[in-house]
Image (cartoon, rainbow, N blue to C red; front, side, top):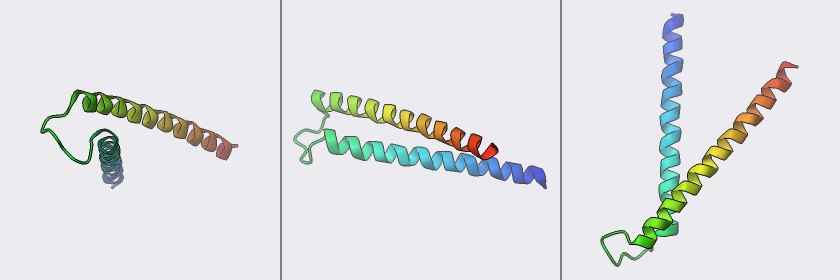
Length: 85
Protein backbone atom coordinates (compact mmCIF):
# COMPACT_ATOMS: atom_id res chain seq x y z
CA UNK A 1 0.00 0.00 0.00
CA UNK A 2 2.85 2.38 0.83
CA UNK A 3 4.34 1.86 -2.63
CA UNK A 4 1.07 2.74 -4.31
CA UNK A 5 0.92 5.90 -2.23
CA UNK A 6 4.50 6.76 -3.20
CA UNK A 7 3.70 6.12 -6.87
CA UNK A 8 0.62 8.33 -6.58
CA UNK A 9 2.75 11.12 -5.05
CA UNK A 10 5.25 10.86 -7.87
CA UNK A 11 2.45 10.93 -10.47
CA UNK A 12 0.91 13.97 -8.77
CA UNK A 13 4.26 15.79 -8.79
CA UNK A 14 4.76 14.92 -12.46
CA UNK A 15 1.27 16.16 -13.33
CA UNK A 16 1.88 19.37 -11.39
CA UNK A 17 5.18 19.94 -13.19
CA UNK A 18 3.51 19.47 -16.60
CA UNK A 19 0.71 21.84 -15.62
CA UNK A 20 3.18 24.48 -14.41
CA UNK A 21 5.28 24.20 -17.58
CA UNK A 22 2.19 24.46 -19.79
CA UNK A 23 1.05 27.53 -17.86
CA UNK A 24 4.49 29.15 -18.18
CA UNK A 25 4.55 28.40 -21.93
CA UNK A 26 1.07 29.89 -22.39
CA UNK A 27 1.99 33.05 -20.46
CA UNK A 28 5.25 33.39 -22.41
CA UNK A 29 3.49 32.92 -25.75
CA UNK A 30 0.74 35.41 -24.93
CA UNK A 31 3.11 38.02 -23.53
CA UNK A 32 5.68 37.87 -26.34
CA UNK A 33 3.05 37.70 -29.07
CA UNK A 34 1.33 40.79 -27.67
CA UNK A 35 4.66 42.69 -27.42
CA UNK A 36 6.27 41.64 -30.69
CA UNK A 37 3.60 40.87 -33.29
CA UNK A 38 1.34 43.67 -34.54
CA UNK A 39 -2.40 42.99 -34.30
CA UNK A 40 -2.82 43.38 -38.06
CA UNK A 41 -0.79 40.90 -40.10
CA UNK A 42 0.66 42.47 -43.24
CA UNK A 43 2.77 39.46 -44.17
CA UNK A 44 2.40 35.71 -43.75
CA UNK A 45 6.03 35.40 -42.59
CA UNK A 46 7.56 36.71 -39.37
CA UNK A 47 9.66 39.80 -40.13
CA UNK A 48 13.27 40.05 -38.93
CA UNK A 49 12.39 42.72 -36.36
CA UNK A 50 9.57 40.57 -35.01
CA UNK A 51 11.86 37.53 -34.77
CA UNK A 52 14.51 39.54 -32.89
CA UNK A 53 11.84 40.89 -30.55
CA UNK A 54 10.51 37.38 -29.90
CA UNK A 55 14.02 36.04 -29.22
CA UNK A 56 14.70 38.80 -26.70
CA UNK A 57 11.28 38.53 -25.12
CA UNK A 58 11.60 34.76 -24.61
CA UNK A 59 15.13 35.12 -23.21
CA UNK A 60 14.01 37.79 -20.74
CA UNK A 61 10.90 35.85 -19.75
CA UNK A 62 12.89 32.66 -19.06
CA UNK A 63 15.61 34.59 -17.20
CA UNK A 64 13.07 36.26 -14.93
CA UNK A 65 11.22 32.96 -14.44
CA UNK A 66 14.50 31.32 -13.34
CA UNK A 67 15.37 34.20 -10.98
CA UNK A 68 11.94 34.12 -9.36
CA UNK A 69 12.16 30.34 -8.97
CA UNK A 70 15.54 30.62 -7.25
CA UNK A 71 14.30 33.37 -4.94
CA UNK A 72 11.19 31.40 -4.02
CA UNK A 73 13.39 28.38 -3.34
CA UNK A 74 15.59 30.45 -1.02
CA UNK A 75 12.58 31.82 0.82
CA UNK A 76 11.16 28.33 1.18
CA UNK A 77 14.45 27.07 2.64
CA UNK A 78 14.51 30.00 5.10
CA UNK A 79 10.96 29.20 6.19
CA UNK A 80 11.88 25.53 6.65
CA UNK A 81 14.91 26.48 8.74
CA UNK A 82 12.81 28.79 10.92
CA UNK A 83 10.24 26.06 11.48
CA UNK A 84 12.95 23.59 12.52
CA UNK A 85 14.17 25.95 15.25
